[in-house]
Image (cartoon, rainbow, N blue to C red; front, side, top):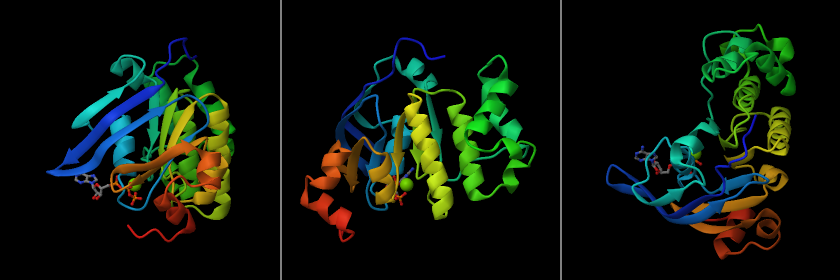
Length: 238
Ligand SMILES: Nc1ncnc2c1ncn2[C@@H]1O[C@H](COP(=O)(O)OP(=O)(O)OP(=O)(O)O)[C@@H](O)[C@H]1O
Ligand SMILES: [Mg+2]
C-alpha cells in the first residue's frame, strides 16, 4: 500500500509554539527518521502533547521550521494520531474500525477492518458497542483503527496512561508490531520501563526545551545530561 516516496526524515529547526502570549516550545532542533520508535519523555507540562500536535499538523508552529521530505499535504496524508482518550463513535467496534477505511476509499474495507481487529486481538468483540469497551480495549481498537491505514508515521500520546499492567503489556506488544510493520511510531510516555522496551531513540523535553536526545541504549546506560540522569532516577525537580 505504501508508495516509494517517503515523508521521513522530518527536520525541525528552531521549532517554536506559543499560545495566549505564552511560549510552550522554545526552539527545538531535531530530526525524526524511519526506524524504531522515538519516545518523547519529560515531566508533566513539559510540552510533549503540544509537540505531538504540532508535528501532526493540529497546531501551527509560531516559529522555526518543520520540514517533511514530502510536501506538507502529502506528508499529512501519511500520518495518524491516537490520543490518550480515544474518541469512539457511538457504534460497534467493527463500525469504528471501518470508518477511516471507508473515508479513505479503500476497497474491501470490511475485510481490512476485520483483519485489523484480529491483529489486536479484538475480533471476538467486533459487534460490541465501542463506548462500552474497557479502557484497554478502547486503546487497542484505536490502535487497530490507525494501523489499518498503514500510516508511515503514527503519533501516540501516552497510549497506556490509564491502563493496568496486563493491558499495558498488550498495548506495548501492539506498538511493537506496528513498528515492526514499518510504521514510524512517535510516542510520549511516563513509563520509563516502556520507553526502554520500545524506544529506538529518546527525546527528553524539559520546560519546552530539548534537554537531551539520542539513541535509547546510550540514553539509558549513560544519561547525557545531569537532568536526564535525575529524571531517570525519579528525582528531577523541575
Ligand atoms: N492551547 C494551549 N494554550 C495555552 N497553553 C497551553 C495549550 N496547550 C497546552 N498548554 C500549556 O502548555 C504546557 C505544556 O502542555 P502539554 O500538554 O504539552 O504538556 P505535557 O508534557 O504533555 O504534560 P503531561 O505529561 O501532563 O501530559 C502546559 O503548561 C499547558 O498548560
Ligand atoms: Mg501530555
